[in-house]
Image 1: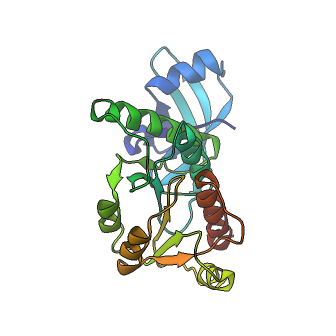
Image 2: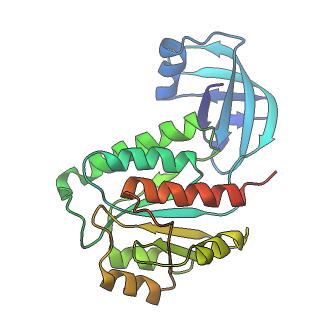
Length: 245
């Protein structure tokens, strides 16, 4: 079922409507007709099953059939991602959102080789957020997670300083039992930060700074995972443990 996001004022009792670029997508791309059903989400509030009642060039009018509690994980999860080469970040954004992440922050660590032109940064962030919205729709998220502007390593630590759980997978870490213990003790009271290094990993000095700020250094196993794999592997484990009935 197709899924769209609306603002709170676009739902009024048994009636709702969609405006903006989604109208063209519904009418001219998907060619949906009066009587067909779709799902809408009011960001941070409720999901609604609706039926199309009327379409025009700039608006789709809906009848609300059923309201449903949203399908989000019970805690906020922020992915701090060392900026990878090529278009890997776009794939990471897409898959991380499918796995329930709430926010993604690209991080400029010491071994990041990608240079983002400040003049093009806003365009990059806009594209990343468009990918985020598309992934949120596809995976039936109830919110559209945000992708923020790239931050420095130090800013990243400050951004998540108050999080209750902070995890940093590191290739030199030992002891998978520690990782299992941390994951098995996750609860619904603590927001979670996951910090993933770029292709070259973290420098030891960065790991030291992270642990000094409360990050737990963990291992994801005996194999070395690529930057685009490590975060998704950890997020998948977190999602399974936090998913509610």
